[in-house]
Length: 324
Image 1 (cartoon, one colour):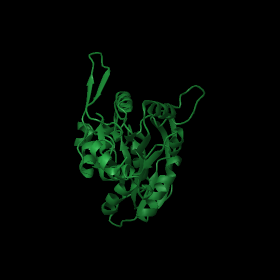
Image 2 (cartoon, helix red, strand yellow):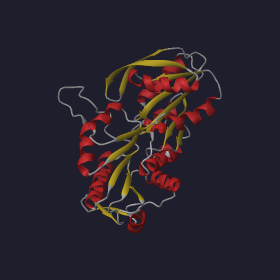
Image 3 (cartoon, one colour):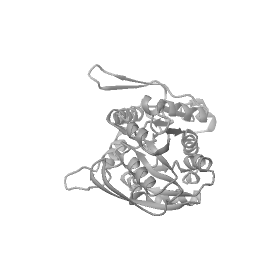
Image 4 (cartoon, helix red, strand yellow):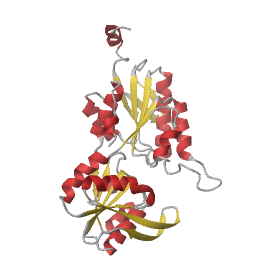
């Protein structure tokens, strides 16, 4: 097909970005960065709670992106995403990219007991079956989740956004970057290298899900700014206990950094009572009234980063330079 014919068709050349209900503000910010409007779709509920999706634009042969974090309520937002993907597939969209800033169910990425599911793999299968041609996500809980898909997966990192703020915040003070567990050492090491800080690890012993019984810091934090780095903060039990351990070890100040501020259950109460001076996170998850009002929570936007990845994907350009 000639360029003029494709332009006349309209839908095939246009980039269309649809928003789920999980984080419409982030989608609007992404669209503003790209200079395109949010595509029209109607997401409603039947009286029994079932989700009804109506795509209200022509997408035949087009390149479409659906922005939806599977955050609280995770099951509802996941179902919305699946139904939107299915609707777009049945509307003959040319390529459908599921943009999932926060990929839910990622913590269940392997069998840790004899009779448990691998939920991250199940969600990957559901996304493919629903019609996703590729997935764009951010800071997966475990990198191997990319291997659960048989379609391309681009896993972006919020590190550049977080580092930019941290450099100004610590202003050259002696710094130790702390990983709250052994699994996050690689992430913490990357932060420490770019902040010219030292590295420490917390040895934690769990007594059950979301419950930490004991913590010991391996590394030097005496009279230094301690930066706790994790991919997500859920109930904030681990991060608050780690902050207290850092203060007990002589840290001058404690900052916490994460990509995904889940902040469920008692998280805000724990943060308010903790020695954490500031929790720095991104807007991959929309925050509720309590976390928005909490003075310790600082939210940075990743809209420009995601928008650039979408633009390059649409124009068939490399996005490898975004993987910092």
